[in-house]
Image (cartoon, rainbow, N blue to C red):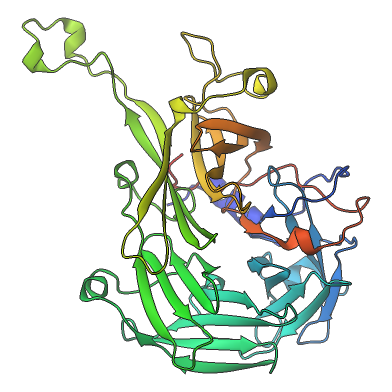
Length: 447
């Protein structure tokens, strides 16, 4: 149950009246990939990325992409000149982004279909925006939509898995930009009896490309439903994700984003989980080794909470996961001269050296850079009640803190989408917008 203050903060974050944060001017070109905020803003912002289209009711809708490097969070602005904030049911959302395409969902209060989907294309040439025609597939959430750019670069396919009342019977709805129409296929399934028994439904958190015409609907609690959406008779297979780490099994978890994430690059599915755990007491002794108990031995000592991050990887054809890297918070070294001013309150009480032991990490996002397989972005905050927080970049293999940037945490934040859209946009540096604050979804999470 949410208290009144928490509920009000939650409502404000999702409200169409929520405004973009302060916007300093950039001085460098955008990075080849960015972290894109899942929720868009209803705001009148324009720059070289702006494109427009007509809604189903004839209103002009403008979309602008506002970019910054991955230690900040890029975002999208949506604006209809003749509509007010009250004409939107909630903030628009970025459904998914692949290469130079971005799928956007906008929920209008007075449109015949209510929710409408728009496809944004970054190039070549001037960015474009088009309304995806309905009727749309009946999905559990917008995260059930996957986006598949075609090899020619001009066309794309949208695909949605729609659950039926029969377990593991799905309708695959496919939209092709070549025909500009929807079609429906009934999937065949190749699912083991163990999976059928243990998993009754897939609730997609995201959809990832797996090469060729194959998409993966990722349920971060359970696994990945894999299907080649271009096949005439599509076959649905299932890849089980690693079980929750022991420290994450207790308590109610309303969303998986604070703990887990999945990405695909270089032919591999990559999985990461951040676990909160009790750090062992080095002074604790077993009664088997004690002949005398002092009063201090009879008192319960407070447990010190720490965290560790672990990665796994596999190919779709494998029947197993292989462990990648694992790093504990206290193992991650910090570049003292460069980062000391940004981490003034996280020094070891004994040695005085910079450490991550007093920070709790969440919302892991794997890097899209092809040469950075072990780089992960995480949101960190102090264990105390201090509002200070950082977005950090950690090399799990080398166990070093690569970089960090301070952020304020206000209300809701769901893990940002890694997106290559920035590498296709020709932006005017005088008008590109940088986001310098971050939002966190922390209701009932591990923090």
